Image (tube, rainbow, N blue to C red; front, side):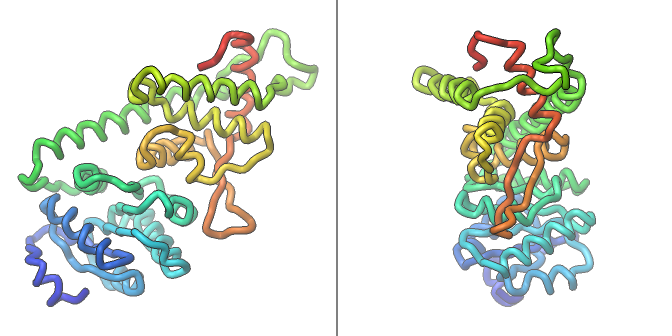
Length: 307
């Protein structure tokens, strides 16, 4: 899309640093433009995947880049994701990547920077809020447009509360594994973690899922614990867990699950491992200290169900 096409969209310009938009299709481009306009931001340029790297290199200043991916662009998409991630990590701009559930694994394989926000199948309010949140993290003041202002403000407060809850939980968890006291009677002289069967962990996971038959799942949303249990079960069974599967196990929207996953990795509780057979996929596993703490926890709890 060139400058003439941009003008046809009626996009406004101001003294604010521009937001660059990249998209994998015409439909994705149109949706991204609607989101950026709804946030009251200036659009600097719109690009298809093949032109994004060159355009970023030419850009002197940009407040953010919005990347809309609704179909798999293969190696070209991978290259764009690495470019966006590297520039965001260097502090050149804030970045939001909007994608679909089908693309979680290839996107996660290329995006490592914790400041890049990845949203999955998000609604319009969540999309607008994600952009505003990214700009605020980058220290850029941005007034949301009056369109759905009350809804946007509420969504921003919700996202802020969610991020704060993640930070508080992880602050406690980050000292947990190192601070956990060993059982009074270690499993063996070497001090190794107690034996734990995969069936024990699976029973806990089943019990947690059964709650949704009787109560709303929102009452019990605890993605950090659900991911910990899923990875522990996989470790015992010697299975590998890709990002997409872990998001499902978290039992929350994929965007929320990815946010938790990102912060758990940054705290050292989870580890990312590249798939040696597929460069477009990464596996997630428990850090050794996290695994040890979980096993000792189950040993300390004993017979009562851990739900």
